[in-house]
Amino acid sequence: MKRLTALRRRSNLTLNRTLMVWLLFFSVAFAGCGGQLGKIEPPVVDTAIAEAEAAIAAAQDVDAASLAPDAFRAANANLEAAREALAEKRGVDALRLAHQASADAKIAHRHAVNVTKSSELNAVILEKELSVQELRQRLKALEEKISEKESDAQGAWRESEQLRQRIQELQIENNELGDTRKAFGKQISDLSKTLEDTQVRARRAEEEVHNYGTELSKLRRRLEVADKIAKEEGYQKRAAIAEAESLRKQMREQADIYTRKLAQASQQDVAAKHAEFIAKQAEASRAYEASQPALSPPKTGRTSLSTQQIATGKAALNNWSGAWQSGNLNTHLAYYDPNVVADKVVILESKENRSKIDRQQLESDLRQMSTHTWTKAKFDTEVESESVIGILQLSRLVHPAADENDTALYDVWIREIWMHQVENSWKIHHEIWKIFEKVPNL
Picture 1 (cartoon, rainbow, N blue to C red):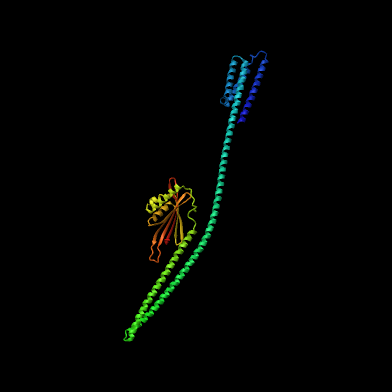
Picture 2: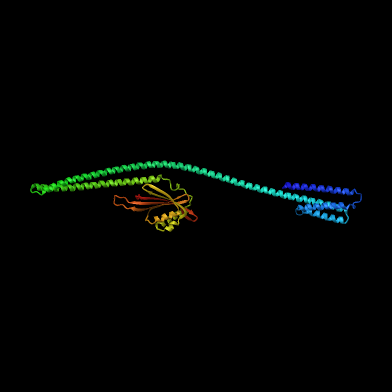
């Protein structure tokens, strides 16, 4: 832009110098006429005026009136003055003014052309600048996309690294589960051996009962012979009666002794077998639970909550538990975040069934569980990171013990809830259910 302005100024300066030279030339020429300056031929002046008019018309065509108004007005003024001088027969003045009008018109024409070219050039430059700006914006957008792709690539790499680590962890867990299966296999083998021993003892008891029946049959036959002899007269009758009474007494004593021993042996065997079965089942359940992937994040015991926040969170936990115990299910459900996610685990005979449930399913399951009578065994609280944690253990009787040798079975329901602060209230964002079906109330 500055270069165009400099060129325009240089062009105007050159034109002005040219006009001055012509004016000096005409002045000298007329001065050489020797005192006859007022006697110039009219055609010469008419030609100069016509040239001035043509120059003004050319300047008008390039819009010099608006683009070079000063020079254009000067040209018209000089042309009008030349015409007046011609009318007053002042030939020299008319010729000079006509040439001045032509010069002014040419200056106006040149200036208008330069302004037009400058505007066009400025428009081209502006267009180029816009193109450059657009290219810069596109380049910036491409750079942002490249940065985004690089970030995505880094994220994908980190995710792949996490997946690789998770695969390694799963392989380790799989190996541990293999060890657990081996341990379970040994436990099953031990239980099978115990069952075989029990069956052997049962067969022995059956044989003893059979032998007892055989012995009893022999005593009955002897008793029948004694009764038959007792019907006869004399000493033989009295001896037979005495023997019959002795045999009856022996039968009663043997039957009583055998019955007590058999009942005692049976009770001891059943009690030992039952205690052993319960211990092995409890051990198997604990081992299986320990072998499964963790349902909740590892607990470090560290927290960013203040003492006041912890107190407020634990109060909310107690209100949540109290609402459940009092049967106020709507108040109980009000503590759950709309986006809460729950892990539900049902364990039956050491077999585990896991599932994830949303808020709607959680509410449905809670309403179904509330139809049963649950007894609170204990309720503990913890803190972890930005959460307060409540662990509520409930149980209900599902199979009463038939006698002193039988074991009562319960459903045990452990609820672990994670609650964090949302503005001025505390909401549950995660809950874990562990439901042990038909287990002793250990």
